Image (tube, rainbow, N blue to C red; front, side, top):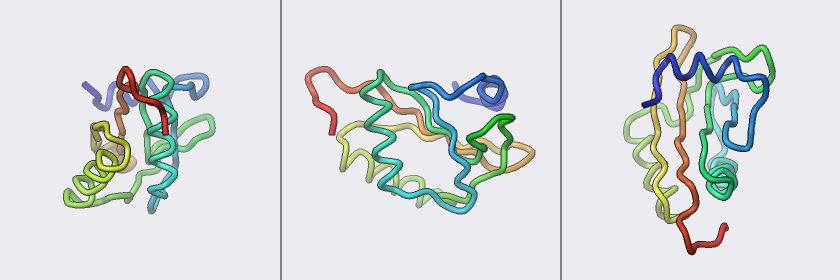
Length: 115
């Protein structure tokens, strides 16, 4: 389960990895870029895209307004599934410094090629 404690642990990671990406995304995030990151993470065995956190160290929570309503979050989940044919879970965390979105990308299903 992804929670604020998990986020705090990730913030201390020395670098991003092939399975953990941070994006500032204060106001919005490009949907095409999100889809590409989902495919890349899925091909690497799954991972997380964290919106609302600075990319560079020391990482700080800056908050994100991307997909800021329940309807918008449900819409992006549906769009990811429609276009990529796999489900991505989204966790919305309310950090003291702002809202953080965590996209939990599964590994690519066996027998499917990446897009």
